[in-house]
Length: 211
Image (cartoon, rainbow, N blue to C red; front, top):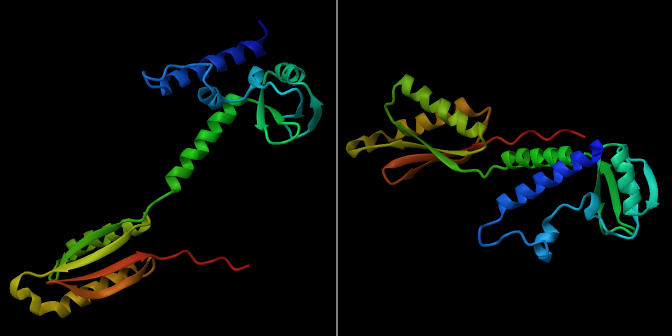
């Protein structure tokens, strides 16, 4: 058996196995099902249009021909024939390594999902008379949260008669903002919230590039 046919057969087996794994027990693979058939990738022998426009690996247009002739050209290059646009007239197919193409596509999708981040509000709590060491621990936590794209709610807590030192709590929050002003902007200035005083910081927006 030619190498191209062997590799294509392996690709088909892997795709079948992957499809089986994604199906539930209640939904066995049914080749006659239009829905399941539509989910299979349109490659090689699955391309059944009367005529297609063929594009080579380097983007060169090889003209209009039958899928069978296009598949023969792909086999000679030990590659796959892949449908890239069924809306065109005639449909457009490209010669490529489908396994590599699928891997790169999934890799890009994973990277895109990692970059998507929903901002949360992370709270950092202080006492008005906090020591220097503990202050810097919380400062580093706030820096980390801001660096990850989250907002920071800084809270100075008071107990009982400690509320008479509210001005010290405000000073502490202003100090925190000064220490973070390179990476943060103040979204809510210090304000009373029950017995406590809170402030909300947001990550500083990146400066716009001048055109």
